[in-house]
Amino acid sequence: MSTLTSMPAWHALQNHAQEITHTHLRDLFAADDQRVERYSASAAGLYLDYSKNRINDTTLALLKQLADEVSLPEMAQKMFRGDKINHTEGRAVLHTALRSRSDEPLLVDGVDIRQEIKATLAKMKTFVEQVQQGDWKGHTGKQFTDVVSIGIGGSFLGPKIMAESLKPYWNKDLKCHFVANIDGTAISEKLKQLDPETTLFVMSSKSFSTQETLTNTLTARDWFLAHKLPEEAIGQHFVAVTSNVAAAEAFGIDKDNVFPMWDWVGGRYSMWSAIGLPIALQIGFDHFEQLLEGAETMDQHFLTAPVESNLPMLMGLLGVWYTNFFGSQSHVVLSYDHYLRGLPAYIQQLDMESNGKSVDNQSNQVDYSTGPVIWGGEGTNGQHAYHQLIHQGTGVIPADFILPLTSHNPTGRHHAMLAANCFGQTQALMAGKTLEEATVELQQAGLAEDAINALAPHKVMPGNKPSNTLLMDKLTPTTLGALVALYEHRTFVQGQIWQLNSFDQWGVELGKVLGNSVLDDLESATPKLNQDGSTVSLIKKFRNGEI
Ligand SMILES: O=P(O)(O)OC[C@H]1O[C@H](O)[C@H](O)[C@@H](O)[C@@H]1O
Image (cartoon, rainbow, N blue to C red; front, top):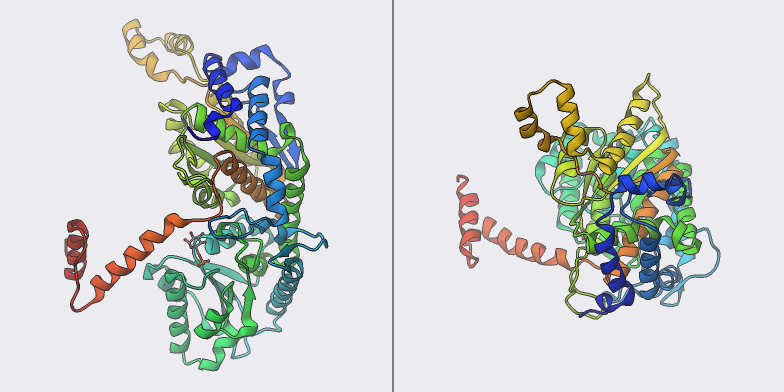
């Protein structure tokens, strides 16, 4: 039995879950008109209504006890101060330092990283301003109109989704494009639209060894040179962001054009570093700094607020409550804002690559569920696609609804309708519709009794489906920074409860290695074909070009 499942709070939560499954949220709201006042909290420009969760005061007390029993507050302090909590890679975890304005020295292996962070931010600021003001032009003297950010995983999702989310703040004279996939269509379709004389390439790869990014950059480089631009023009049109500066130089990127990052920043936590350069180019450096400031405000809240009003702690613990005591296997993030339509995909990598693991910090196989599938999309679109399952499916899928109260594009009644849909969905999930209510509805519609008896059960909505509602006054760089930091710390909370190292990703290695040996067989004149039968069959079909 693992240490986690032997903890007193764990056993108490198991017993408590048995009790609370017999209560309906409808009844909890009916019995307490102060419920939302007691189960809501605000911080860093965000408001969390968590009253539509399957909880009562005992639940929260036991979840808090569990947090204490795993020493969560102490673990958070260790992370922020640079302890090497990423123990399988022997690394600190300091994405929080990237957005900190503290001057307190922060040593990693004897080096004060605050100075490196400051120097890199200054380098980014100078570069962004030079590009925006036309002081850094293309080889033929034209100002850049387009930026192509080449990267994948955390070197793609952060830049792309944050830039997309902050469109109201875009520098109108510069358009950022994002290429990630090795599929040649991705880069080909992008390059078709572009003029090499006015295009700047930002190649982002922490390791500088990722096949997709290296290949796409070489293809971009070939395209660039194929347009009669000389080799010496590369230096003006290609910059890189990486922790492997030597590899970047060997690749042909000028040393002065390399923006450093560090091994104490995980890829999925790296948008605050120079990986965020495309964001800063798109929205301007001042707005990028506001993104950092919003995140830092959430950091301080996470470090100092008591559990019962600590947004990341509450959301993280509630996730554990459903995963481990209600059998939930997925969690849905619903952005009721068109600009935030990509956010669920960002949180998907953040959370699933952090906690999609089954070996604990003591190198033992866990005997409990860990990271759920994170999915989601844009409201109200999801209501016409997958909300059916959330309402009437057989499982419990906790939902986060995210809505800015003010739209950047006030258009007629649109925003009121968006908000009404958002709130209506959380209400329907909570209250549901009973058989009696469905029956009365059908009687009022004049259906015959046998028809009613056949149809009514299909119209029953069990309700008691949990949701969080996250509000902000308006989507700004500051509130977006706070929102992303909130989810980073929510992921940290869950990883700590599950006794996981949330900051390595050994699971992505095998597929890459096997893919390389398959590639040899796909391209070789004399393929070895010493793979399993299915893979050999697939290789042969690819080589023959027919199924
Ligand atoms: O930035 P790179 O070193 O190119 O890595 C890009 C991505 O590669 C892997 O898939 C990791 O799992 C991701 O966390 C990382 O963001």
